[in-house]
Amino acid sequence: MEKLGVGIVGAGWVSGEHIRAYQRNPNTEVRAITSRREYSIHERMEETGVECEIFTDYHQMLAEADIDVVSICTPNHLHAEETIHAAEAKKHILIEKPVALNLEDLIEMREAVRQAAVKTVVSFVLRWNPLFLTIKSLLEDGAVGEIFYAEVDYLHGISDWYRGWNWVTSKGKGGSSLLAAGCHAVDAIRWFVGDEIEEVMAYSTKADARYEYDPTIVAILKFAGGTVGKVASCLECKMPYVFDIEILGDKGSMRNNKIWSHKFPGQTDFASVPTILPDSGDVTHHPFEGEIDHLVQCILEDRESFVNLEDAYNTHEICLAVDRSAETGEPVKLPLA
Image 1 (cartoon, rainbow, N blue to C red):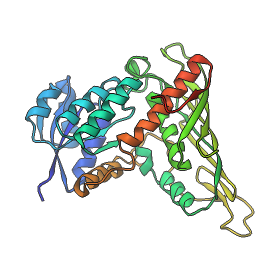
Image 2 (image 1 turned 90 degrees about the vertical axis):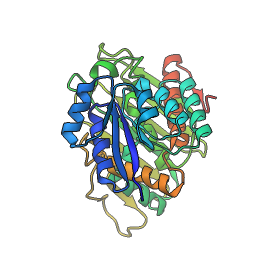
Image 3 (image 1 turned 180 degrees about the horizontal axis):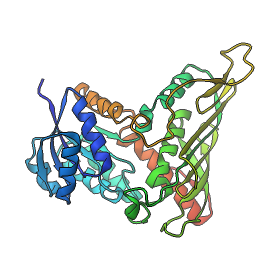
């Protein structure tokens, strides 16, 4: 079978992880990279050993390169427009999060993908994290019964050590605490509870004046089925990266990799599962290979992903609703449109 040709959009750090994952997949070949900065392309090519065409114009790559799949690895504010153009060019798309920074762009890109009928995966890469897979499996097995409360916190102090610091702190390019990074927590709580959120109430604050938005935000969530929850995101904390997960059900509870369950008679303390936690930026904790293999499989089998743009639309809409609630001081109902 002929390999799927891949075009990488953007040449920052994360693009290198995408390239390596495509190189490991026997059904894909990276054939083009585009970036406004040609030296960054050469850095990624040297780093990964890939040999491919080079473009400094995204539209030229879409028109001329022999590609079937586009991986969007650019700064946040560019994702929506680039997704729309890729869909119009009939390319399958892997989109780094967040996919959009406002509701109008979110709606427009969803419509473009629907019209084009291309396959998409949004890079909520933690869905392939070993702890996430363990939790999901245990929940589906009824280990905690019916969930009535869930809590997920993204606490990761991002400062000038981060190479994207100059743009991620900007409201116009980074978006907000949730859109820039905490959306992983919102996506996680949706996936674990298995229900949609119908109302949010949020508060935010700022200790680091270098951010153009409040980098600390907390929201109370009401799910359609009656479950309640909490999500917090903090990008200014002075501590190691922490991704906390708590799930309470009528037959048991989970706290990160620890479980108390009716399935373990005589249990006297939480049982721990030795696994990889989502508390690091290391690739072993953020498995790009899993999500890219999944996208390729969806393309080859002509089926939709469980983390496609349609699904990610809901996660992003919640983030936008939380931001709106924090700004107005009022609860916000979903859907927004």
